[in-house]
Length: 372
Image (cartoon, rainbow, N blue to C red; front, side, top):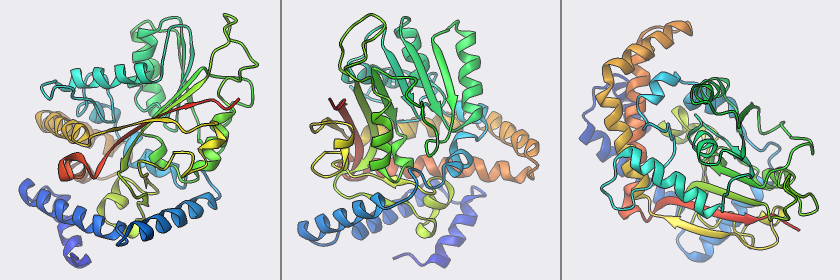
C-alpha cells in the first residue's frame, strides 16, 4: 500500500503539472491493483456475501443521491466552454463506441448515440426523458433524429440547461425541454409520462437504487394510458452505466484523489447490480432486463481522445479557466489546478477502463420493460 503522506505530496505536485505522465500512469495502475485487492474478499462465497451486505446498506439510505451539489462543483458546473473544448462535437461526456478502432472521436460519439436508439427501440413520435442529460448530447441528437418526438432532459445543473437551451434555439429545435432539478426531491407528479426513459451515466451518482427505481417507474407510461396517437405501446427504461465486472463499491471522501476531487458520493455499480434476482429492479419491471457488457477499452479510448483535445486546446483552456476562476472570486492559480486535475482525471479513467484489456471495468447497458 502506498503511504498517504507520499500520496499527498504527489497530489500537490499533480496540481502544478510537475509529475510526468508516464509516472502518473504507473502510480494509477498501482492504485487500481490495490483497489482490486480491496474489493476481492477471497472467494465467490465471501464476495457474494459482501455484495448482499452492500446492497442492504444502500437500501437503508435516506436519500437517492448523497451529495448532488458535489457533482455540479466537480463536473457539471465547471466552465462549459472549458469542458466543451475537451469533448467531441456532440459534447458527449460519457463513453463513446469505437466499432472498428479507427473512428475519430466524433464518429465514436455518433456510434454510441445510435446504439442507444437501437437498444432502447426508439422511434419518431415518442415522448422521451433523458434522465441526467449532461450538456445535451443525447437530448439534442434525439431532437434532430426524431422531429416528431418530444424530448425532456433532466439535469441538476443550471449551466447545462442554459447551454442546451441556447444550442436548441441555434439549431431551430422546438421539441426539447430541459428541467433543472434535484432527483432527491423532484417528481413529475403524475402529470407527465414517457414512452422511453434513457439514463446515461447518471446512476453512478446515486445511492438508494430501490427508491430511485420506484420513482422512475411512476414516470413510465402505463399501458392503460394511450399515446397521443392512440397506440398501446410498451414503455421502456434504458440505462447506461460504467461498472466493475463483479463488485459494487463506494467512492468515499477518505478514499483517495478520485473520490475527493471528482466523484464525491459516487458509486461504482457491479454489472449484475440491476438484475432483478440481485437487486430490487422489480420495482420497475416484472422480469430481468436485457443487458449488455461493453469492453472498457471503448471508454479508455474515449478518455485518451478527451486528453488529446485538452492538450491541443491548452492555451484556450487555461485562459477560460482563469476567467472562470476570477468570475467566481477565486485566485487565478485555481485555473492551473483545475487544468491539471482534469488531465489526471482523464488519464486515471483511461487506465481504469483499460485494465486487463477492459475486462475489469467496462460499461453495462440494460433495457427494462415497464411493469404491468
